[in-house]
Length: 128
Image 1 (cartoon, rainbow, N blue to C red):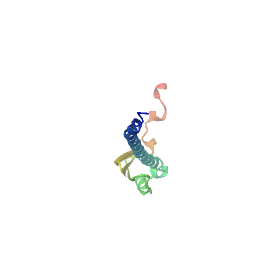
Image 2: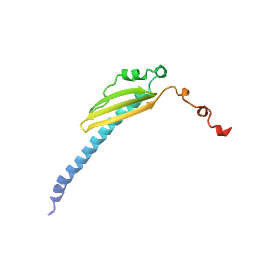
Image 3: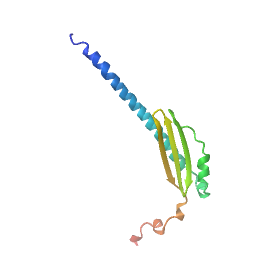
Image 4: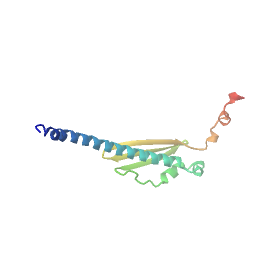
């Protein structure tokens, strides 16, 4: 009965530290979620360009005409896309309470058969 108050004092010091650590972990996980959601949407846009548009070489116009909704829940995002020399890139910026984070995705696209070599069509030539 004489050491009753030590647990209350100890918990009044330890519990706020534990709660702050849990809160910071949740903020970090939310920031990572926002970043990966934007990266997934950027890759989905780059990999879902129709082949007819690639053949007409109007990928840049197609990517710029996409209607991008703000995919971030806790912040704001801004995405710009470009297409040069068979390579489409998408640059994104996330702005939220933790600051700004940049995301860059790219995908090489085009009709690749015009750029393939003979040995790329027929497995290995050493087997002959």
